[in-house]
Image 1 (cartoon, rainbow, N blue to C red):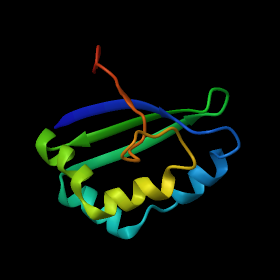
Image 2 (cartoon, one colour):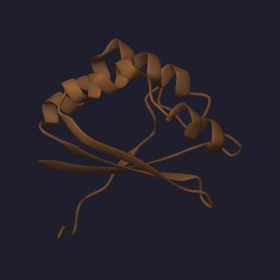
Image 3 (cartoon, helix red, strand yellow):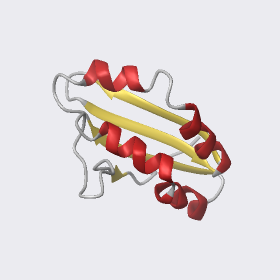
Length: 103
């Protein structure tokens, strides 16, 4: 199992809407995540900084990367772009974290 962690953020005043849209996520997006080998996926919010910490357990890096090419992922990104900083392709601005300890 591959563990991934990354940081994103949400724009001020959009924290509640960000949480609402994830409760639950679109069923078709959940199906794509599972079909691409995502076993666990959690996102945590630090209300003081509006920083989002995401953690995922995946089966394969190539399958994880392929999620970004799916229509449902692209539509999800487009639907979330007003809530958070995004790249030109609407993907969230994210900084991958390096694991330095695991027990």
